[in-house]
Length: 453
Image 1 (cartoon, rainbow, N blue to C red):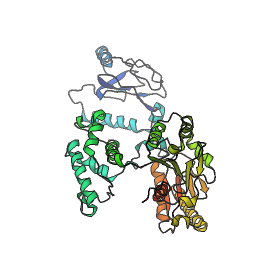
Image 2 (image 1 turned 180 degrees about the horizontal axis):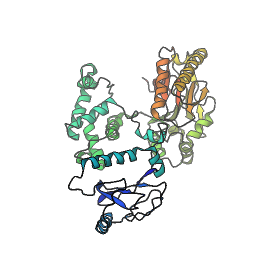
Image 3 (image 1 turned 90 degrees about the horizontal axis):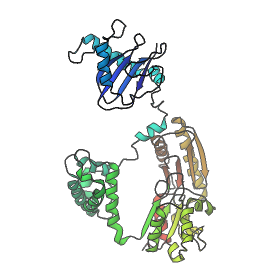
Image 4 (image 1 turned 60 degrees about the vertical axis):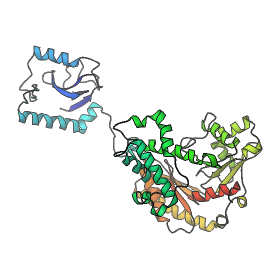
């Protein structure tokens, strides 16, 4: 006989654990489980109706359906004694403790039922099929939420109130920006980087607290995302008066991964307002389409359509640029609201212009070899994509963020002695290696806008 475990939907009051037997068709209740009805029954050879739950034990997952199980159990207890001698003996007395040996065997039997693969299959209980169930595992990945500063701020909430934390961090950040080598933060967080502006964290916290109510929570500290929001708000206040350039990552920032800017994208209005105020806007994307600006236009079709419909003057559209291929292609908007490539000699630095095609091919060959080796080691089937300034892999099956991150880090270690700068990154659904780095892209954008003094 096969035992099947059925979990019914939660109900009110005390939960009931019932053991259906193929010998009697009766329920032997065990009161005391929390807010759920677990029905364990013999389902293979007998089809008998349960007098408590009024369901056939040949049926799949059933709900208690709001039935007052306690009342029905009391009625059955009054009418019939508990069955005995059927090989499944469970003490119904909750107050006297029962026979220790009987209770011990009961618990062993119950757990063996719950842990049985055959039991779970018969009951159709939903669970992760294996470690390759990427949808389940992806939700548990925390690799993207790792930052020494934010984790330290969260830890301070165990001994400080949120306001105290922000006051202390604001003071320490100011101290660190003035003397990074001997600051308190450099001792507490060795991995902390450089702060280019003071951060008004207290002001930012009060703004965020108005709708998030962080200060009203007594037992749960702010999480990673909440602290990051507060820091972002503080950064906006810090740069607002001197802001000259705003850069956006494309995938996962102004639109979802693998999508484009459509007409209903809420970022369109914000981007246009920035441009109308004389603030440069640059979208930095790893996507690279050498010699084909139309493919870039497809990515930003909704934004370009808005430019055209609003008939923005060239004095406004000149504030918009796209940097593609990490740092290899710069595009601007022409008078017809189309994207066009900016000639390399107008924006590329001297060292970028000196990158040889032979050196680029050698770098990409080594990167492709490292990706191939990593995918084989991780048993991940992939599709290779080779471009003039990039090489990457796209998994053929679902995987998780950490596997892709492992591949990206493998390439970074393999190419550590490369003569040419490169960027190996995890795109969330792929891994790519581009010639050049983000710093080149930022400097190039500033050069094209004549913002470097």
